[in-house]
Length: 475
Image 1: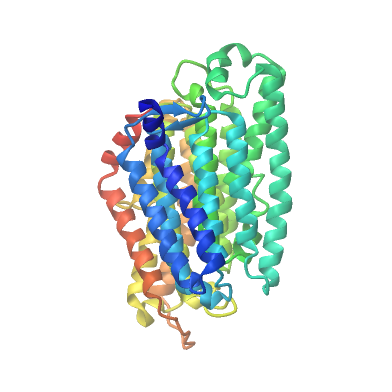
Image 2: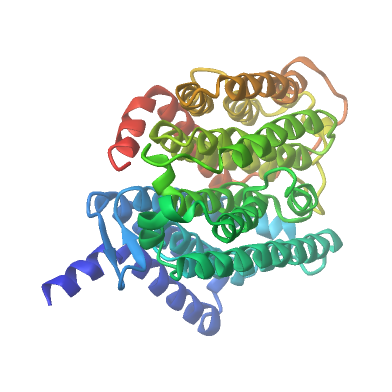
């Protein structure tokens, strides 16, 4: 009996979110004010689950017949997903009205997608990862096309669905081959036998297919082709969710399944795969972003580059790299949601004010918004003392410790290239004048979300060691 109570207590973040989804569905069905109630109810659910995950971070255990883990790194990922989703909910309250898709279903789909992310992060079995991925992905396809009157949104949804289904095929076939070689889908048992299994071609091929399936969700080169069109066609707040929560969930699944390779006892046989796609992702994302005139497409290509930086940590294959990735994902969630949040506030009706020209002279028209966006651009560029700098720093240090100095150098070169297109926004806002006036619709909830993101970016930049020590203590 005591064990059952303890298990229930450990999985309470998932229970809170699951119960919240059911309550939200009832409000959507029976309440005429669901559009007003659901945003705030969602924020309460996300914050409750997130803070409880932090409170129980030391309750490390494996439950549900070795299918699900709790505590430690799992709960840190829970916090990233839920707190990020709470910010997306705040940003969306006023934005969805302006965008023309103010439906209560949005918040229910958002909750379901986060539940899928949490299943991926806590998985101790390959089929739980698959289940979580599908729950998240199906919600994402619906969220991308939420505005049924927008052709771009419909196109984004269809493209995401077709390529997402294609990626899932890789993942499922990979799991089938892994099962064929290992005769189990339990991640713990596979980890115990990994040293013997890594010599079997079917097992290695299965894992490569599995990693390719997740590489689509990470938006790594050459599995990035859906990213620019989907981000541009989706609503801005949803694009922010795709670039943060979806990416973090895919990385969590890779870290969970390949954990045995990152403790230093077994050679990282997938180092060449991670290193190659890291190099191409960083350079491709940074170079192509320079030529973009639409800010959402620019941020889409930049997210490909950031996936490359984080893949350096997987190539390094040591505890420094994994801790660096988790810190980077935490920082990236806040700085990218903040950037998309400012874009959502400036965006006009019918998806106007999305070109870089709309940001010319913003410092004179709205100095507060310009200052907030400047902070996020500096952080994304990796300029100290903001969180983005320390995220890259820890990743590059991990690569050097793993004798992959050349990979760290490529990362630095890519960062230098990216400084151009990030600081170009700052130059346009502060050093260019325009005679064209654009109207910016006031959004107190959106501004609150952006300010919270900015504070988190600064706090993570001031106290990076504290956060990193917490993450490292569970590796």
